[in-house]
Length: 176
Image 1 (tube, one colour):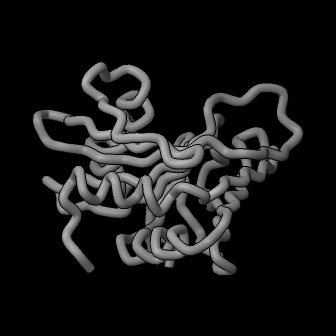
Image 2 (cartoon, helix red, strand yellow; image 1 turned 120 degrees about the vertical axis):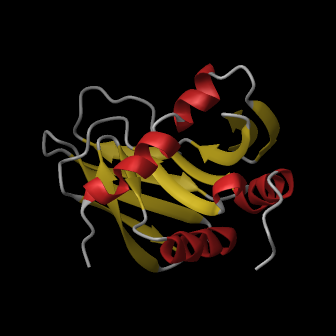
């Protein structure tokens, strides 16, 4: 089932449009630690805690001339009861109405795109992806830019279980 991106507009505006900015620009972002190549952070937005683990790809493929920062992020927003939210930042604008194919642990997931970001369509899929990430070695994300350039980003998951534990403890993620 394809959900219309406009249904997620309030979520996007309130939630994740500022995520990389929180890492780069928010002086209150506090590193929880580095785990392999993953870094875990805690921050706040409007006085509410946010915890996230972020990673840049170890390898990228695609015939592009320039590209911004590419990141894989798992975020907790306990005040909104939002945990395990997976997002991919492409470093370019995705082709409108396209999906990003994510493969982790031998399973494939289709993430919807909006602007330069991709997310799972629901919390259950986020949870499945994160569970696979805790056991797998790598995650691959394949997307297409608004200039029709296909890209593949490969992320190592070494260190993710420890980074995930750090954000779970900091944002007091409920068990289960």
